[in-house]
Length: 381
Image (cartoon, rainbow, N blue to C red; front, top):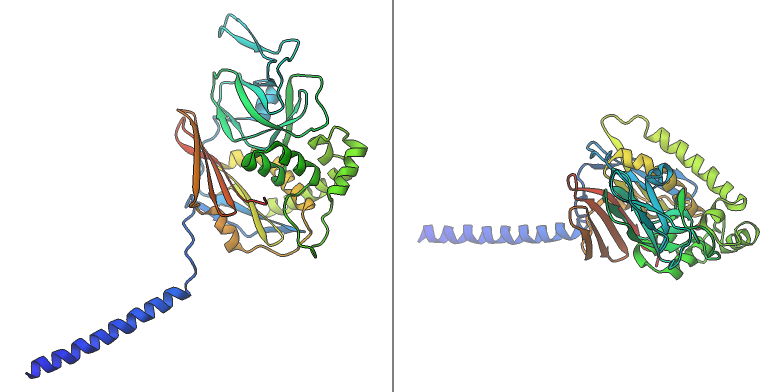
């Protein structure tokens, strides 16, 4: 009887303790922030941001880098003559003694199309293409529409592109390296929206990011860009607009200031290398480009930095500083609607959309699987 009485008391006390403990756990859990999914690559680490005017650049560093020396970039290939880009319908073929064939542009370019070019990789390395890279020449300047890899020995490739020179359709069939990648607002319309009219609009208006009514004025506005077109770029060429005296001088000084700070902040790394950046404008984290190696990052960095500077100058001059936590969000995996494209044995491309965020990853399948380039952005439209 006594044993039963005391057993009841103990059971009751344990029940109360369990209930209180459970309530305490529920209360504590409600106070915790929502967990952030782990980084797509656990080797990535963020440095403190490089702040200048309305931009903040967070270097992404890693102690582990892939060997990407086997890849050829578009600028390299065009400059060395190892890559040929022509208007559609402008490619002929002749036989040679060595490899049995050689592609040459004929005298005329019948069948040219605004949104498609032909690319031939004549090198002995797979060619890496990034959305937004500009090729100059032909009937009008174009930008690459989508990240992809062109293998060695591939047949002439019909290449999806977008025009960034609205006012010209004449002369020439071969393209040359421009060492330019368009700024994020234009790149977004090509890579995500894939809309030619939106691409033209972003070229002529600068930024597609919406500004609050009381936001400080951007360094150059749509009106400034229009004046530049009238004075220096009558064909509405992206390259001529953003390298003009009126616009280009501001971009150059902005780039120099950020690069000086960036070089200083990353000069003392030991056992780690910069493989990418996350970029914020004002207090808004907006964009990231991350590569499989520091070598690839170094090759793209000069033209990427210039593209980020153009975007900064076209956005309102807000001086808020983005938080490291917000920047770290751009390293995580997204959970959302996913689409994929692939060329067996060459590459896999995928896009994931979650709310206003879009992620594009380009994975090389040879010589071993690796994510060559990762782009994550906060969409403006």
